[in-house]
Length: 223
Image 1: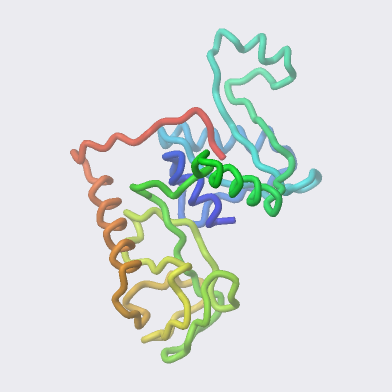
Image 2: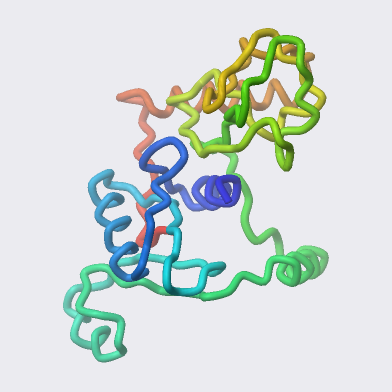
């Protein structure tokens, strides 16, 4: 889920409020969505995040968005509430079916549905699930029992190891449960993938500096 949110965030120019996201406990999606919208307003930028439902079905996706204030009475007439934020919900996610549909569209020349962007600002860092001692081998990051992923800002966690990079990787020093794994913690061979990761991290840091000329993109919706 953290990986999915990061791809959506990079693809649509959104950010996160903090490492690992908010993950709000929720008994009412409208209230929780409004809370996330207020956090986004405070940042001045759209965010990606999720909620943990209690009392209603999970597994869907939602957007929280604004609309022209003079249209508020008409929107309320359509049962979307008084505003200023409106929660739009798709209460299902048919991943295994939607992948095939996307592949057919690409083969027909329709282009990809979403990509990680040429200038990502978010990544997924590897967090130790348990104590991993120096000399141990992490067989795989994604889907393994040694680490989990948390969304991070590239500019904030420059030395983090992307979870997808961990595969048959030896640790040089012991890491504790909950610790973010850095490149100083692992043995890794030079590769083109590593070059791209370091380049993206440097660019993210550069864009985050004052006076860089990068103002970001402001959307009207949050995932």
